[in-house]
Image (cartoon, rainbow, N blue to C red; front, side, top):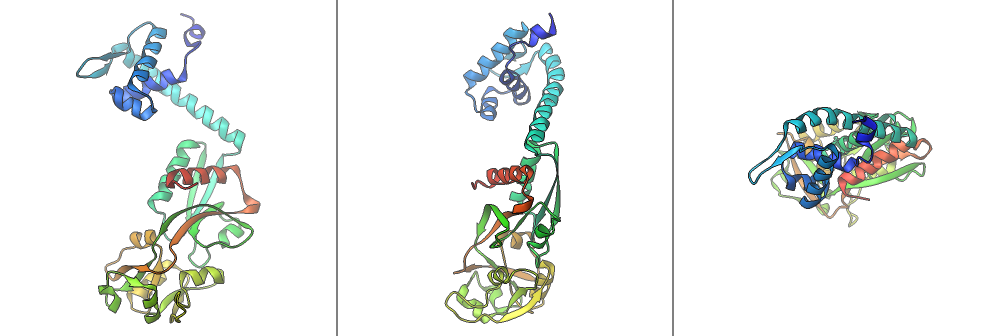
Length: 304
């Protein structure tokens, strides 16, 4: 049979259905992955088998398996389908400007949601590489202003008019890191009012004053002064000082979870605004690649 005649009218959905069924060997799970009913899976398979002129799958009450011809077809169809998918993705990326290298910064820790978003982005845009670099605690927006990264996941707030705030995620109760020898260490939690009884480790310049105030407030919500502790440039400096009882440090919950230490206790704080992470980029350096990653991050975290 002429090859052009053989593929004429072939629906991609038929091929996708066969390839997934070859992996799952189960009509129900195949339908779940493709968001199709079992009857629709059977219909697509029959259409493909009718087009080829032979059975590709044997189905009994106990099992589903490929026929020898189905095995041969799978061996040739899978790489061809993958190559076609890559060609479509690369061409689409080129048309939209989603290509090259995305330099992505993160502050504190690259948590599970961020890494899942990077994986999703890579699956969607295989022609685009991602470089992940840590953003200094005391300079959350500097790398964006200096064009050292294309976008960054940082602790909020962000108020600079030249910076764009994309998806906001991981809204959590703030956490206080204290030495295990600190009087608060035995408490299940602390209140914002109790911050007036402990020195808070602050953040050095060049972090903007409003941002530093949010991470280490000078007063409780009721107006009581909070004693200032030492100021640090990095997260590790702050954790080391907290462990040495030189002060206490407010953290977002993902960072606290990632940096567990035997010398520190982590206590949820009630009465303070939640911390949150956001994807930020410079307005003058916006690209289709950044917007594509923002979409992948929003889909991963469930925020839009």
